[in-house]
Length: 161
Image 1 (tube, rainbow, N blue to C red):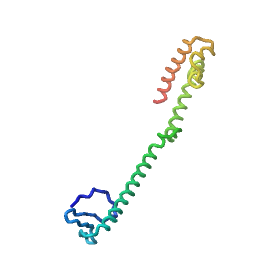
Image 2: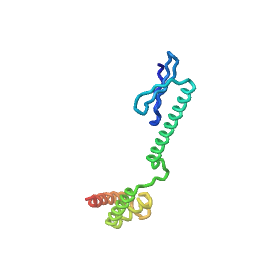
Image 3: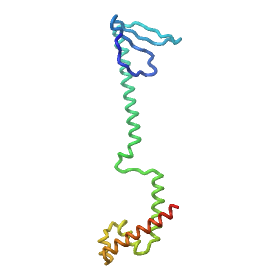
C-alpha cells in the first residue's frame, strides 16, 4: 500500500482513505455501529472526492487554529503594541499611593530643598537655571538637591515600614 501523508482529521470524520499501489484498489475504512472496522472498495472518483473533503476539512482546521493563535496573540500583546499604553487598576492605585507618599515626603523637606526639588524635577529647570534664578552658585544648588534626595530616601524608607 502506498503511504498517504499523515493528516489531522476532524473528530467527526470517521473515514480513513487507503490506496493499494500494487493492486490499484481504492478503499475507505470506518468503524460500524458495533465498533467493527469495515473496509469498502471505492472507485477513484469517490476516493478523490473524499480526499478533497478531507483536505478542505484540514484547511478549515488550520484556518481556525491560525485565528485562535492570532486572537491569543492579539489579546496578550495588544497593550505592548499600543502607542498609548493602558494601565491596570493595580498600577494606577500603586502609583497613586507612591505619589501620595512622595508628596508627603517632599512636604517634610526644608523650604529651600522643597523649592529646588520642585524646580528641578517638576518644572524641568536645570541646576544652572535654578542657580541663576535664585542668585546662588551652581555648587550650592547641587549640594541642596543631593541633600534633599538623601533626605527623601530616609523619609520614604520609613514609609515602607
